[in-house]
Length: 297
Length: 278
Image (cartoon, rainbow over all chains, first blue to last red; front, side, top):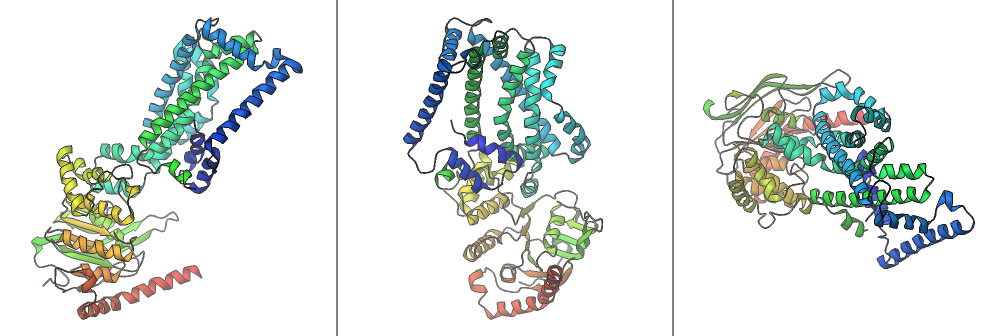
């Protein structure tokens, strides 16, 4: 799991060509490619985690109150119970599956809608100009509040959570797709037109591939948003899911339960991040490898 | 070569014809900017015409009018007797900037024109392989543009354009970004590939040596807004080797003739540049 993608998405989202040297420097730093042996780097990382968990455990057993702050061993026990005996809302796997399904559905639909509308609007200056204030307005709404509205509209079932995840994902992807479609090199478009490309050919072979790096950059953030959407949606009312587990833990002053829910969510986000990075590598295999560049520093 | 100096022999063979072609662009301050004005030019089928002029005078604009990428503001532009509306059939255009698709390998880049025109994949790829070999890139079919040198990318662009067998070839300083040796090599290859194709070529450049060694006629444009100042017939024998032909006394004489005409315009452009800096 590299941090490189996290570094990359910020500059890519605003200006993809911005200071590649500085970016590579940051990547090299975060990936530990500063000339040290990877074994040493990993050993120090493990040591840091051990020190952190150890001091937390020690503090909770001596000076601070574990009732409020919990401690690693209690969180571990909670996880063991959840995974062996199940939770108050059924087995942990059921709950994970529900949250994941909500997040993935919201992510897929949101990404699709964001890409389609972003690219179409990015290529149609007039429509974009007409709609700009409305889109900006919609983007300024604190969208997490919509979760409450969606419960009223769609009820306590899965669709209200999918809707919350959708609105969060949509705008993240939309703006990048829009920008990506706008920044397509005019020479490439002219060249394709001369070579006989139809409007659909242009979209398929020039505009979409050109916008792909922008879209992929937004997808890293977007899956995180989808998870947030699903969990916040569950907070507002549900009968299964990680969000409702965390919400119940809060109601019962069960700090280890909150931490355990948080930990599982984090793992889900990291796995998704890994998958998106793999997808990104596949779709952008035509580009020079950033790894090679970083290593060459 | 016995080309008429100002106009090609017969009406029928005219590939490109501009009459009083003028192009104005809107600017932010509302004043508008005239890129070219009253350009009259005929290019015969199978003829190679170079267009030279001071930097930024509007040479490229002439090409975009012929290609149909931009409509003319006034005047007429006809291709094979038909007024240009949209992109005419049989036009090939090599751009100054890199126009190969970075996300497609060499094979797909070269084949794409045929794919756009509805040729099935198998046949398109077979012909693309043939063209890749003709531009000397056999063995590089699977490479992506970023893995190629600037000269090799130009070869890809050349194959990408020529595979559609254009009867009208527009080239906008295609070799401007290459080093001198690569440029001369590419010029020779262009001549080889063009000879016998019967295509009318308009080659825009600001390099006089390049213009004269390739062309049948050299058109000299004025400082912007550009119009045709002079047309010089280049009666050097073909086939030509560009490295050799430029050493002959006939070449030197032609160079002097074209430069005499162009110098004034270059000086005007320079003076404008200087006053803008000052």
